[in-house]
Image (cartoon, rainbow, N blue to C red; front, side, top):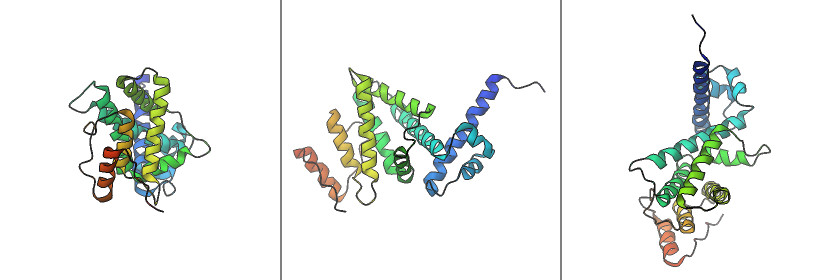
Length: 222
């Protein structure tokens, strides 16, 4: 049998790494970070356990890369869904909704991700993070930014802050209210992106007051 070509080997390595990232997202989402081991992730991915340390220096780096992969794939899907558009305001609205949607739909995973960013090793630079950065930077540029290197980090900080606010145990902010705040800051119409179907009870009243008066809702008491 002839040896595999370099391109075939590269594709096999890419697929192996992708399986590990997907397994990490699944298991941390199901069990939480502390209850998930590198061995568990390797087993779920169908990979040899030694491959985990080949691709990643540790569990924290693996999980952070896995969440960045989920974020950029979710964002890319939102930006490119039909009907496709080049309108910068619509694309920014879709980006906001995509990231806030992860906080709503994947709270365990995203809470662990935010906690990981505050650990000693901080922000992990990886291909997944770079792809997320490229997509958000392009979104800011299409929105009409005259200074993407300044405006992109601000958008990233605002999105991270909103995700954090949505996930604080005991005093979470409602995602529709956080969405309203971001939409007001960027001058986006509520109908852009994927508006919440409805906001029940206190949240609906908060939104009505916010759009009528600009008055921000008080956070719930601890």
